Length: 357
Image 1 (cartoon, helix red, strand yellow):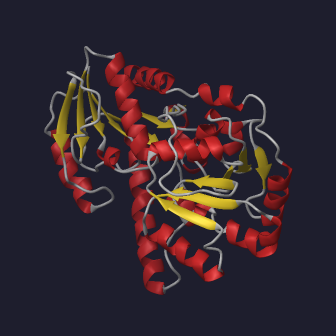
Image 2: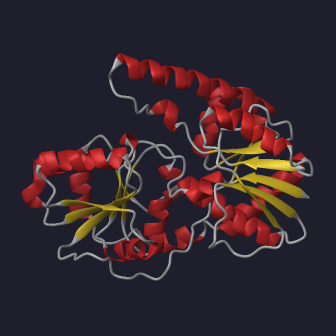
Image 3: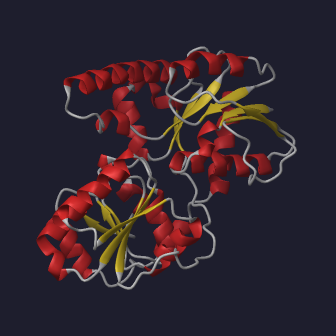
């Protein structure tokens, strides 16, 4: 079999980049006799050497007109491809070959990030209409749809009932982080940890309300490990304006060794997100035996089960009470996290490939 894979997202940090990378590492290792044609922004130098991979460099950005037409032309030119795997909803309109797509969430639809000006609202509305039309078209023509939780599967079916028979839930795996090393900055207080991007739906703003009411009752500091973008920079401004820069510390683009150390030494990971398709950081925290305080919402109860301390993400008082009462991790969290493996994800994904060909 010759499989095509659009892995342009592998060049960016975050869940989607990790999904592409880890899935490809496993599938290419498990199938040395198959050929994999992998489209990337730049060929990764730290990817394991594989004789069965043919890399294709492609500078076409995602979510634009060129992706819908020029990328499709590039993909159609690879005439030996039996099946393409598109790891997101943005399948080129002009792609003629059969494909499988992975759909991760409806964040774009459920949590728009435009400001309140009429111009930006209209721009968002236009993007939403295009997004919904493309998604409906791609869901219709996909040979199969992979999604990352039962919660997202149900969301897809609610919007596109005829897609129900195409959908398979394949949980992502938990990547092994390197051994912890102390961060390149001093930490002198006990701390709670937050990990992930700073989009509004991630709900880090709950910390501002929490400290406004309970600053002198909480001796702990807060460290938020995130990527530098306009959302994290705005969050930093909000923290500064509220006068909490001495208690909430944003760490941009931390290394995996620092991330591992922070998991291993935090009082708990706080994961206050309003919406998650899956949720990797809580599982990573569990793998280091760190307690997890999580919002009881969307996919998180499905993924974490009984291995988290739960709170309402709209209730900072409930979060405060939960933080005050945790003493240790919920039993079995480390073993629970170990159940999510990229090996199993790759095996399940390959079964889908074979079923549609």
